[in-house]
Image (cartoon, rainbow, N blue to C red; front, side, top):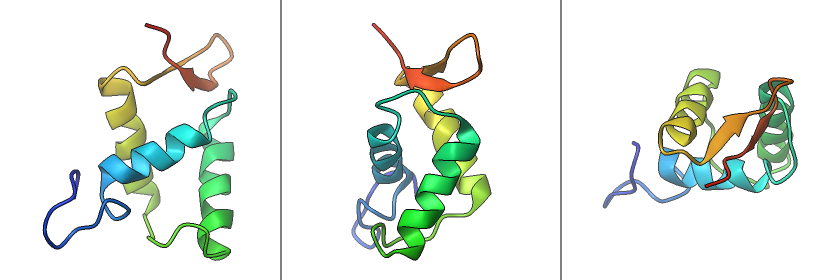
Length: 82
C-alpha cells in the first residue's frame, strides 16, 4: 500500500497520498487542519481514495522519514529546507 503496484493506483498508495498532502503544506499548517482539508476534499470528490486517520498519520510519518517535511517552533508542518 505504500507504493503503487499493478492493482494499487498512485492515488491509492501512501506515496501518492503523501504527494497530495505536500501540495497542502505549501504554507505552514497543523496536522488537524491538514486532516480537515483532506476530509473536505474527499467528501467533495476532489480526492477519490478514502484513507483512515491512522493511514494519514503513517503518511505524515513517511514524509518526516524521507525528510520532506518538518515542524517549526509552533508545531506546524512545513517543507523541510535542504
